[in-house]
Length: 209
View 1 (cartoon, rainbow, N blue to C red):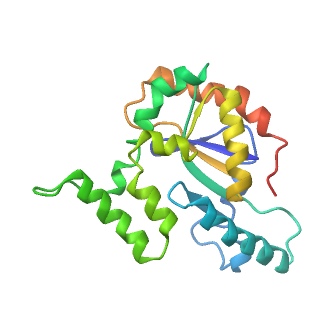
View 2 (tube, one colour):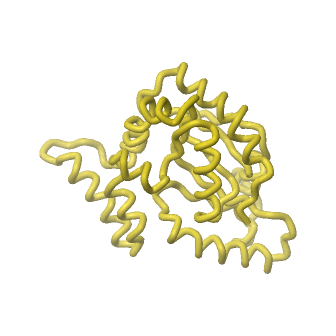
View 3 (cartoon, rainbow, N blue to C red):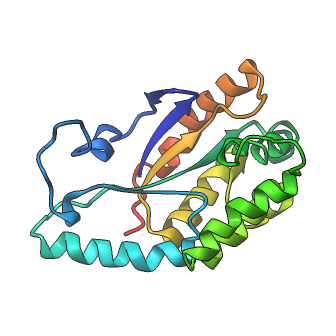
């Protein structure tokens, strides 16, 4: 399995095959057939809705004549600490505020709940009920944790969370959002270190498809 870290606007590689996930997306690249393009999903895409699409993607990949495995990516918040409880105490609430930027900017007379409902309605209009439910609850820490939409815990827990999510959501490339909300720098760097030293080795030989 491949992984990369995201720290604000910059990205750096954690040991793995990160560059392969970006092939074909550079500016000026020649036009590619649909099956050649890497696919990337985010936490807003419900896995039950995403998996059938990616199975079709894999079928198209094979029909196009490709013999190597494609990179299907998934991006969400991740935080690793020494124990599950320490990780939850440090990061769960912040994870529930990581995507406030998805909403329209605050405006007079419009509540936070109304801004959330407006964004969720966009997915209802596209007949994506799973994504609409996620967006309506994206700022609820318990919902995120129960649905496995963020990966928070000890190295063993995060590795297990990633494996389960990858098998259900059909992804083999993880783009981790490590730097979110008001996470302290010491906590951020410890999380990245533990992910690289303990989570990645547990995933290196894991392939969900």
